[in-house]
Image (cartoon, rainbow, N blue to C red; front, side):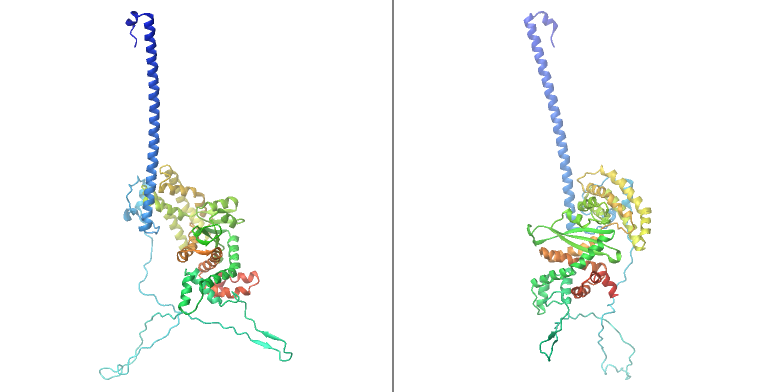
Length: 540
């Protein structure tokens, strides 16, 4: 600060110099202040950046932590998605801190679910009455029939026990004898009796042998190379290439029946859809290690319920779009975007979501999330919805009654779930397991409510997933399809085998009958009469 007394003793030049120095020092201080402010802003910005980075790293660490524990559970834990009270069972690898629970969550955790059950009677089950019995009589010798007192023992009854015996498969060769006739008069006419048309012309395979090979592979998941060894063991040489040729030829013969099953699905107003992977070694423009897909569609009236498999080289949305073009009705499906796109293009197609896919998300979150209490709350509410469905099924209610009960009991639960989902959405990280579960549920919300509209609809897609399971089991055995024709043949035969299973028709019996009759079929009515659900009525 300038001293006034000093200025009085200074000359004008000196005063000017002092003022100039003062102004210069003032500017320097102002510049330093601006620099400090700029540095402060920079430090604050860096602090904010570091805080965000730290938060992102913490989110990533938590996400990796959850994935690690999910892998531990997948490797060492139980695969069943049955909800148990965590207070009594505990969580596997539970190293997370407990969440702050609301009264609703605490109430959900405090309630213990003990499903009703009936104790099964122990002991060995009796053998089927329709099996033939061969009696083996065991009697005392004549000397043993004499009592020590000298009297002869009298027969007072029999003690019967049963054992189960197996006779190896019966093999036989069908010899076709063609009677030939000639005219002895003109000696120019010769006639030979013709045999019926065969499933595979000029082949040694009868309908029974084809049914045997097909049912072993597509019902009992026995690869063709194992069947080749089994034929060799009984002295019959049938190369694997021949077995593969039979499978493809049989599928071509069965194709019209699959077309009719597809019509059954598309003509009804309730359908099911899902897909799974399959590996095809020799596929154009694709390496052997790449994945292809087997799409599965189901539907039709209950008494004519049908399942069909479609092979496709990819999981492209176009497959679902093409199949449901012109379809009118409901489609049970998971959250795959292909079905959503198909519904956008077809306004008459209404998607019905799966509550058990939602349950799976929360079940995984409950195993690893720090907010397991929230996950358990949603699991408990979904379990209540499942109990309602189980009761309706056990009581064999009509669709009208089912819709009425759902509106009365299930709808309030669903409404409460929506409120809680919206509440916890902002309280959880979108990268956490519980956050992903909540977001998935909200994304599927409109589809999850669809089953309330019609009593014929189901709460889950379990029906179509059960149809995929046999294919997945078979895939673990035969591992891959060698070629595209082989994959398409598998799709055709799996369609018919699984439709048989759905109607409790033995696939071998049906295949043997259908393969014998198909070569003689000429009209649509004749083909329709061979469908598995008509065969069931016939054998009754």
